[in-house]
Image (tube, rainbow, N blue to C red; front, side, top):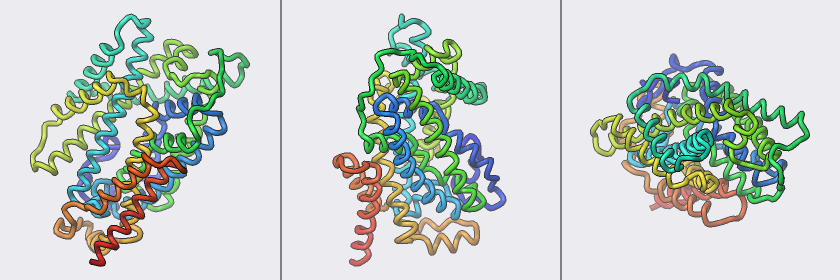
Length: 425
């Protein structure tokens, strides 16, 4: 997102003249929804449950994503505010919104680790597993970190190659399996390992960061129709089409290992598509995480931090997670995202649409194209933070229903009760 739209409005309302067409915002959002991680999620589901159960879980998870994206997206479009600024006026306060940015940064570091592990597996396959995986993970993470930190311009070209190449390979494998009766990997097993509710949380968790940060993109939408179609089209393509294809492929081949899927069916080209896709995704992960960390530290300390040094620190953290085997806990990682981020959305939605704690001052300043004065915003919204903690705990501990849905409903209700109690004192 930050590499596609100007950062000049990151700390201000976006003016009407800066808003763009439906095609422009949809392409940016589509780039987030149709990446390598989406294929991995589908493959995980396809290998862990029956095809139709996996599609049902995709549907349930997508409904949660759609609800959060539309709710927060409309607020972002109307106010012309990014997620961090919107959170500031939706219960979290000045410090609370910074803490939200840090949570996003941590999730991006996790994604960097996941992607670097996939890159490592691709290189291991190329060298016929003659080198220790930890060594490759270390050097690949460090190399990409320094390239991004130094602003290596050639990285921007990987997206132009990686995206179409990856889709071509995926489509080739999909069509090959449809028109061929033989199964490439034998010993097919239809044993389910994920329940539908667990899988729905995995699906939701896979794009939950994107859902919560919808205002970063939706503020560029011209109207609510553009907002609706931008979100809906991306969910249809990213969740149903990409997920559906990857579920089918993993189901037929009886494996969730993307390196195995690509290399055994598309050879060197398949391997190249994985490596380029990982570079493309991790380039954005590292850039966004470093920028978010810089903004958070600036808010806490009042000092500007060196982008190069922060990128190195973020990259080292992601590399360490890769070496620790984060991909082995991929489902747990997505499940965690699926219960940590929904409570944030629950608080913001209840505050903006029900309690409307800052709506009056937002309406007044919106007409002037300004932001509310800091004096009108609390330093930290303890009610919001406590509600998020309660929602997360409920999502983690209780197994009934869909954990993502449980966490967002719990946090929303808890925040409403806490604010009502506070105001009645």
